[in-house]
Image (cartoon, rainbow, N blue to C red; front, side):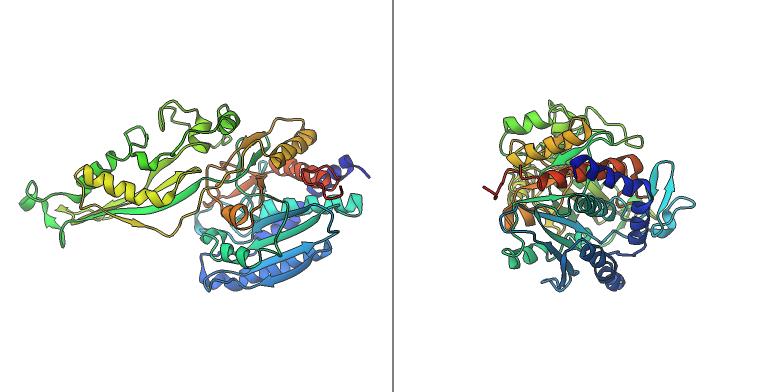
Length: 466
């Protein structure tokens, strides 16, 4: 009974085809939370697939309704071995984005797991069915080897993350006492590099909004009115250039971080190499905030992006001056930036720049920024666990560059949050041909078996046995 045997059990789960079989069965569930007709499938994923798996591991399971009418159900599972033992909270989501069935490469389909050239293709492989399957399989390997875990586990599996996790925060608030734990250890998102393990402890926030300019009713012939009527597409484009430079630098003070990066954050991310693997796009080195490294730009700074821009009819242009223009934009931001200040700051800026007619509207798809200091004891503990397993250095990110509903755990449940991602940046997440890498998946099973083993070994930052 030892750590290495537990890791070997997890690796055997990959090598003998069990992981492929379990993941193939889970990928086959069409859990598209953005499609209302798939609501029964979301519930069936919890009751028919995940509950039997968890009960085999000794979990007590219950499916609970979402406190928000539009939200999907939650699966809560608990394995409690003793009140003096550490308690870990873990999380995953069973829902996926739309399959886009007709857009996948030849021979690939979103609801069938296909292995090809070291990649496993299927919707949910990376986000998030593959990741929570790895964590539960590693948990099973430790349980088989030790006969017990040596710690308590509380798990929440939601079915609405791809729609912004409606009801998750209300659910956590209503069940705060039941869900209390010493730490969250969960998996989502990508590694910084496929070749190295990654930890992140929160995520950048995202604030979505629309800028629009409506000058008149209807379009007017450009031959008769060109040079006489203001063009809203041109005006809005110029307004945008006052917000962000031609090289991507944010020019409005109220949209930038309110304070400099702390020494611990800067030390953790300054030298990180952003590596999305073989299919990653080339980095535009001159883009973004001057004087920052690539890691600092993604994990330590705020960015402004134009997601869509429309004026006239792009699909069928006509020779007419359009009446309106709009841009959908968003800001990725780090703590301690206050997103409530974004629109007031933009309003003042646009007025000062001579664009009072440009209207601003906040959109609903927003997530707060969260972060745990890289010097936190749970971070150092997790790094040591992974390094012992892999012998490799760990990329430590104070926060993910993207966004997760981490605030439900770090703020509402008030626990430190440590995320161990098992995907990579070029996995085609949310797109056709989503996949995971065989190499990363096998490595991740070993990493998680080591973490779960050490969690039950009595040497955690919270040792209740004393």
